[in-house]
Image (cartoon, rainbow, N blue to C red; front, side):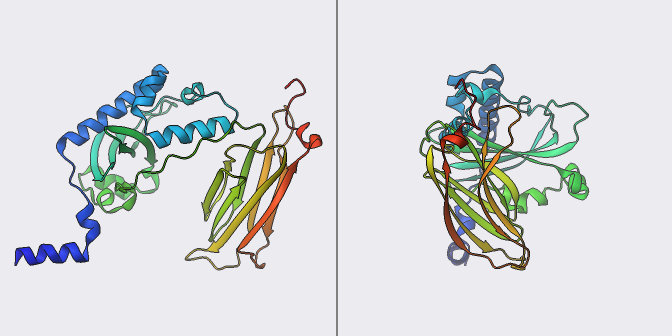
Length: 297
């Protein structure tokens, strides 16, 4: 009977079977990796940072820095404050799936920006490529979830155990191709309540926005001459299909006092008809370029 139940579980709940119960040593290893990564950031130690950081994350950071025309690798260490220490925090959840892991910590997380820290959650993600490497951190502010904060403080961890965002995915992100250093800094802005929008600018820069109002850097920047923009838009569950939408691309001037230049726009007014797919171009001509770079560059 036990064997039959196990076989049924394998057939009906394969995702449960793929999850792993991490060995006790995994948690200690992840804490040590984060401590090493944090020390590398504080000490501005490039080799140590490379040893402790996931390969895909290194590539993503390089691409972003070069697209913002910031120095690489020096820009890695130009942070507003040091990463928080795990001292005084309690590991409340550890999830491992394949070559990925997530560790959640609860306590007074100090970002070094002043004020008295409150009890919140810090989620650290890792990938294993022969050894564990740090990937990224997510901060969960429990100010809007006071009951959850009380539950966790009392030892009730149902929130972190049952919430998907605290679980390792099992999928190691692919390492993106290297982008060229940008000549002109560009950003894509999307306002898309109730919709998912995907935008691609030129060859390298792909973006996804869902029910958002935000901007992202264009990887590789804009280039002289013609630049391409393609987009798709579709409704999300809960949307009405009548929401307003805006997709814009801006060129960011490096000349002090010069405002960003809008070079592409697709808009839908509230209640208007949506074109689910579109493409266009914008051009960086000599006149536009003169507004973007100082004359001595």
